[in-house]
Length: 309
Image (cartoon, rainbow, N blue to C red; front, side, top):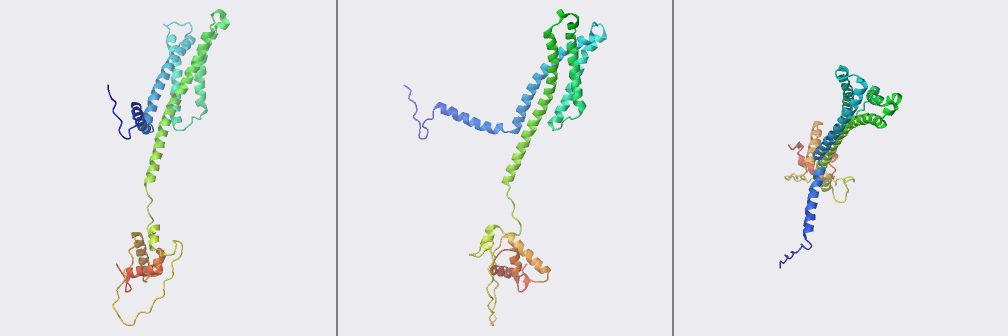
């Protein structure tokens, strides 16, 4: 007797069916990413377009053979195959159909770029070709109505009337299929490009403005009890200097972030261009800090009235 292995911890219910479903889910997960690939969509659209057009061209050729026989009978009349007219009559219907197909192929090209052939003779020429083919196919079938009623065949007359219309419809549809397939491919690539641009914009962080402190930097330099929008506190009154001369040690100012250093250096250069020294007001004009910190920065960037390099 064969004993089934006991499932380990965390594997309760792991049957063969569950394993198959897990494989199908993993396959579907990978297919979901591939289905959205614009290159794969373009290949699928192109493959279906070729199959569809191959079938339509085959049936269009059969219809042209049928209508060509009707047109040849109408034009040749009682001529025999030894007469050049009998042979020339076979070229009339292919010529009409070829002109129609060439016009519709160009129409498909401009339609794929969103341009309509709005010239009046564009539609007139297509209608003339259809009416001419229809007339030459139907008239020989209607002649027995006036000459020999017994020779009239309603079924043949109907087929000779409907086949030219079907051929004309196929010639109209084939260019539309080509235009729509190309439009679908270009639309898929355009959507993919837009998605890539959005993803790239999301990953790019905006660069901070030079000379303007960030909120975190401004909070570090702001004295306690004051918000970022409140004006800085006034500087305390200066104490009189002692009469006894003692060696003074310059107090170094706080370590500033690079954007603030650049702002202070710009203010110092501006003051030097005006022939004066850097002041507390100059520092507070470019950085929102208190007067005490501004004095320390001024002392750090000037010594005995001479700018520190």
